[in-house]
Length: 124
Image 1 (cartoon, rainbow, N blue to C red):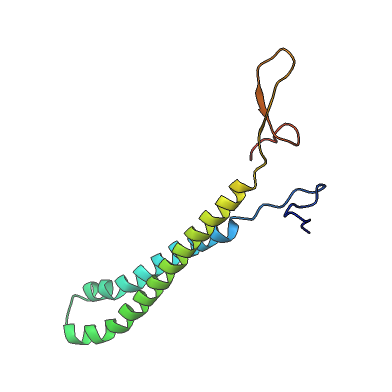
Image 2: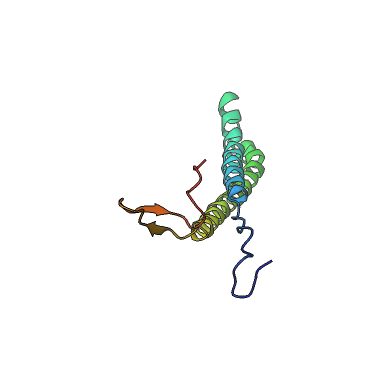
């Protein structure tokens, strides 16, 4: 629940948004692009392995493969772009949610940076 002024309750820090969905979309887009390219290449390999032959009959056979492979590749590229955009947007939100850093002057020592809630936790 957000209090007036747009700040979360003081007892519990706001949960950062996850980048996992964006990364999963990127992985799905890359894998789908690979599948689409394989669908485009398979008829050509079959034609070459078969030693060539009737090109007109092969074109009729391969046209379905080409359209299917093209559709799969285009959808995969769109998913890949969506994953990149989602990951970038979420990463910017996470960066904005970092606490401010205050300069602390210990008695008789140099300044060092410390976050408002105590020393920073180690990064994973």
